[in-house]
Image (cartoon, rainbow, N blue to C red; front, top):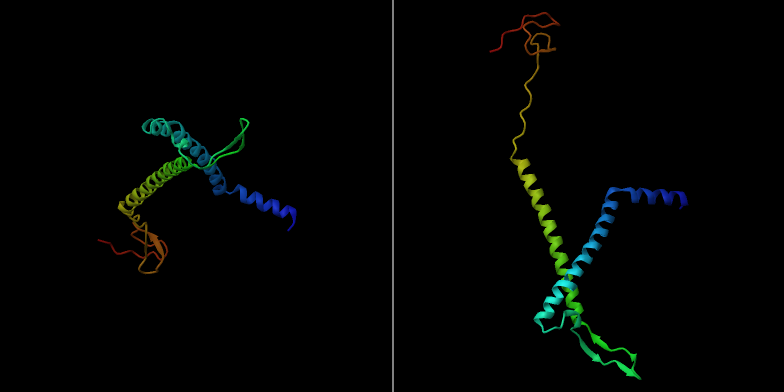
Length: 159
């Protein structure tokens, strides 16, 4: 593949609206994830710590092997299951999933209401005809004509 063709295809791909929208969504989603993490770490976690006697979620762990300390220096770190941090991650996920669910539910509801409103509106009536056909020469003439301009026949009166 020629280098110029590859670059052109890449520019076409990147300039599509849905790709740009997706990129914006990823950036906003990342920022929203940080907000949710902050909510869990700085608001929810301290409240749980207050309820559990001063131990926050980030401090809950099961130590499998203690750290080895030689001459006041940690030579081997502890091996632990950090299930408190795992619970924080689950809380983060649930909050983000709930927010996404609510946004999708609101969008779906708005679309359903718009479609229902569209279905309830009656179709507009077609406009009244402005022409008719001459019964003698079969040409199209003005609806209010009393004589055909083509064959000069006097037209019968319509009731």
